[in-house]
Length: 134
Image (cartoon, rainbow, N blue to C red; front, top):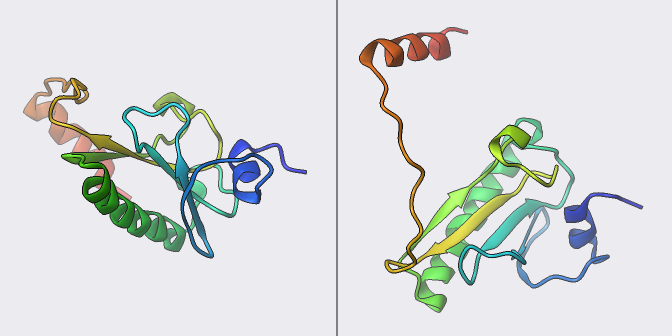
């Protein structure tokens, strides 16, 4: 018996509102939505985070997000949507099963984007250099 919340949802141990399912991917409504229609996309197989997830599964998650995002706009009248994947607890990952959020957005929902921080050219150059090096 698994202890992972999302594995229990995928296996049917915990009921949910399924939105999409195929051989590799399962999508369901978030029980604490940012806006109505907020959906979580998870691989059926357990992977802790994005770093642990095979590229082909990540691609399938994004393809599911594209399809579901279109439905959110068409069927729910959303003006747009945000995709979010929190990778590791420091980034806000609460459930240790990789998952992609699709959050419907409306022009009048009063939700704000993350605040940006100023960065100097010197700082940006230094970071880019670190990330480019193998």
